[in-house]
Image 1: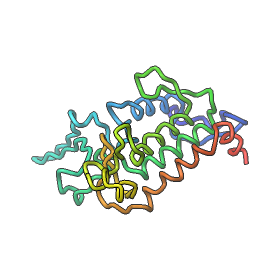
Image 2: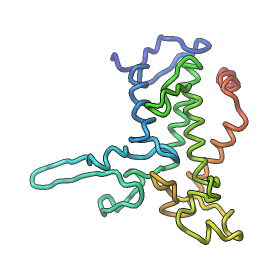
Image 3: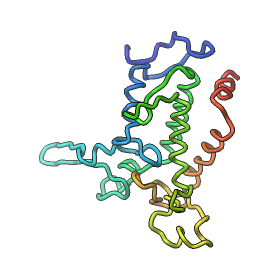
Length: 216
């Protein structure tokens, strides 16, 4: 199939790659994912494109109509148990998988393959740099911004301002798709804790070291 990557094509260090996306389709996916009006938020990759805030997906069957709109925070419906993770918020497990996939693609394409990030900015990045940029945005959820506040704490003044609480970080289930505030269960250290691994990776590894390590 033309849209699937050619298994016989060699990449960096003569590596081969099995992928459902060839180069052209990978670029198409990246252009949507890295669009700040769609999936790329200031704090990571949204679970649903922001495009659907004004253009909800509508499905009609018989006399019933179902619609899914972009919701940055909690769900406004009890559909599927009222679960909100996939309706717009930033969800750490999905971001972790995206980062890992980008690094896998980078190990094949190397430094010569670049995409525009953010889309429309004119700034070109390697896939390693894109993964690093997504990690930087995810990290900003927990770090103090220019106002001295941590987005994860949202409007909670106790956690934002009280010196006895402001450094106590909570690993929420998911995060507001626009401002990064923590939502859902507040102790999802199992999957939200992967942010520490991502931060450590990019703090201790260079692109060159990563490409060399992929040979082992």
